[in-house]
Length: 396
Image (cartoon, rainbow, N blue to C red; front, side, top):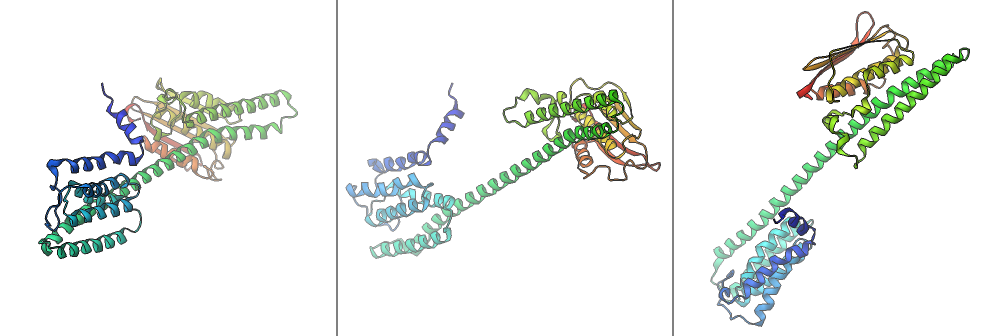
């Protein structure tokens, strides 16, 4: 079975001059066929001249420059135009005369500069040709010459339309590529923020606490061990994230990660909520954790978003309300996951709960992509509450 796609791919790899050669040869072959002699374009209605050696030279001048019609369009058009003028003035009227509209169209498409100058120069050359034909006894008249000029103008106009269409398509692709790169950079920044901030915050808090435990060697050793464990977790998570960013990373690692736009990570990266809560407790934050219902077996986008909401809320609690009671409630329902994290104390969020605001903004965007709802704010009693409703199952 013929693989047409492979053949086309190989054909596109050839130089553009080689790909344009068959078209030029078609005009040459068609022009030397005896049955087609004097059956080409007849501008000026001059008497036909018998086919001779000069006719072969004129045919070559009209046809072969099409080989460079995309590489050197101006050169191609100039040579084809000269060949066409000789064809009409000498009365050969070969099929190769049809190459002129093709050369015009190609020049209009591929000429990058001086297009207006090319139009003016071409018009002047055509007027000169028309005058020369008229002096040689042409009966074409003004109407005939004008009609043929309009045909050539249409060929040029079609080329201009193709050039503008291609430019618009290229610009559209460029905008799409730039938007894709921006979205990917945003996703990467969000993942790095989520992965790094939580672990580093926990390590900083634990290291600060270790300064006051010199009189209690056992607790000091426990705290330092916790810092080491948190550091190892951070390194492992970063390695997983870098693996995802590696272009050679296998598709199997991202199968369970959900849509790229959701910024999801594999189960090995997001870990378990219980482990996350326990890590925060070891950092000195009293956390009450309640999980209702059964989570999904695979880590879909909803489960990843749930993990990130809890992670960011606990990170902010460590930063701005260290030691205050924090309650985490996660309810797994068939159609959605509801998350609520509250931190007691008026000091919990007085110093800008999200730092730069990137963490909470990223959560709002992440949950919004999945069609959920997200809110974060302080209640009248001073507690800071983060709530999220995340569609599960098909919504992911």
